[in-house]
Length: 316
Image 1 (cartoon, rainbow, N blue to C red):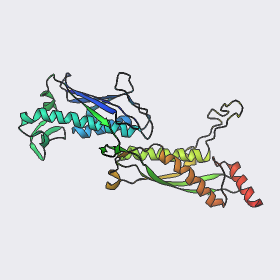
Image 2: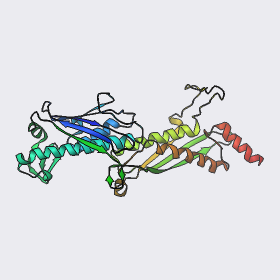
Image 3: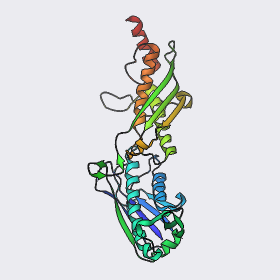
Image 4: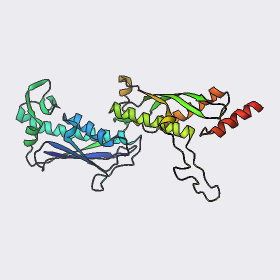
């Protein structure tokens, strides 16, 4: 059996759905998921495969992912903080619904009520009774050439609708800096980020997102600056020679703590991509102000601006 799964992901609506279909394919026990979204470096492929694998009780290597093809079900806009909720919810719901239909088909064969069946460790079995089971491949073979399909809806948690995706990411970033008052150079010694993003699908990739956001904070706080021609509206430094980015030596130590607790898990899946990138800029600017006793009025905190702020403080 080969399962074909399509996901619709969007930032918001109750109309978002995922289509899942089983049957009319060779009975090889594989699961194929196709969805019209993109992987922007936010581990979309990994997340979809993990959710499907856990639902079907299979290994992640048994899940095949197809993304970004117009033949796949239409998906919503992709973004760092919206993709994970959409694809996770639709994948989970469609898989659960389709698995329920498989249980309905196997129940009379196994002489076990459908609501007493579970998919675990590559087998379909009676709950808590591995001795009464069949392998996933054996279960797929029972389908023959028939098709099993279902739709999973992507709904937010609101009112009576109990979806799996939510809003309200929160966190805190702290910065430890050193400032050379002779040259105006700011050195970042350490950034600490504590992040709550609800139910975390994969702690390792979520943590990686926060690391990347902290690096973006360093770049925005110290170096990145777009210079515009005020008359023509053209970017005057649209190349890497004059638009500076931080290197490894400029970033310092980054410590990330994902605040994973049962209380936060109950919130559902919350986007993570952008929120940690914003607070770090303010944390660095505040640390510099605490260090030199005067606030640098704008970012990036270039040596020229730091020295200018110090000069104004001395004249005051």
